[in-house]
Image (cartoon, helix red, strand yellow):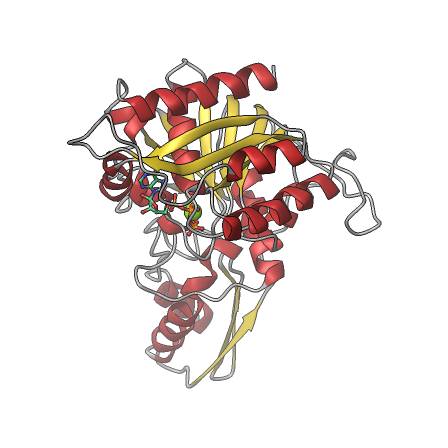
Length: 360
Ligand SMILES: Nc1ncnc2c1ncn2[C@@H]1O[C@H](COP(=O)(O)OP(=O)(O)OP(=O)(O)O)[C@@H](O)[C@H]1O
Ligand SMILES: [Mg+2]
């Protein structure tokens, strides 16, 4: 056996922590060669696996130095797998003066984004329950968690411990969505190593969102719901400049600070020529479980109506604050799926009906 073959053999046990597959088999390690006593290898990590880089580099070094006749290791960082191909033109140009080229996802009929300028207003809660409500209408639904820094959807669907299967290698790599509550879901939370802080740079984030759009096996879908992170940043832009979006749902709470941020979020999509389907006012009021005739507007009144009115879009619903909604988020039991007959589940179903009608 040549030293290069020995080097390859030493590297074969290095694995992707997500899928458990060999990094060589996945095409992440290639161009393995040995010059005198120096081993050289190229590491090509797709965006979603960047969090594993330090560990992989360390394991590559240790494995290669354990081979007799190798005393030096050089690791070259290769190009990540190529991004999805670019197709026909789409969403407008206002934001940056250039016409972005949009690429539909084969088999996916309608992409609906859920967004808001502000954090913690209930975007993920609305995304999950809206997706469940659509799935209950026998529609084929996917859910893409585009919150790459703070992915919460796996917990909300009760699949935080699941690891998606990754098929193929290199640029052909495909992620198989995790099934839960009748939908397929992809999230960074399923791929990063637990408790590892991850810093994504803008271009990396764009690459990951594109991979989730185009390199997940979504199959035939009536709706792909995309849960966005708070703000008006890279994730919103990456999505709007990648795929044709049927419309965006803006989530807000009734108070002024939330409204201001939601307004900015709404305007961003307008500038990108993405239709705004409507506003969901979340945490509109609280009905104590033991006093069902009482209702307390904890965060003020009228914010959703105001935002919808000033932008001439419908107010799709006012969703109450309900303990079951909060507990369901924590325990992986979306209220629409686990308590379909509850008042709040009915409100989410109503939102789903309006969206189906709106984008029909
Ligand atoms: N209608 C509701 N009733 C009770 N709790 C709710 C309701 N909506 C959201 N919550 C709770 O509020 C918290 C924030 O909700 P969620 O994570 O959906 O917000 P978000 O806008 O996605 O946040 P982020 O900006 O961090 O992504 C969660 O604990 C969730 O369970
Ligand atoms: Mg969220």
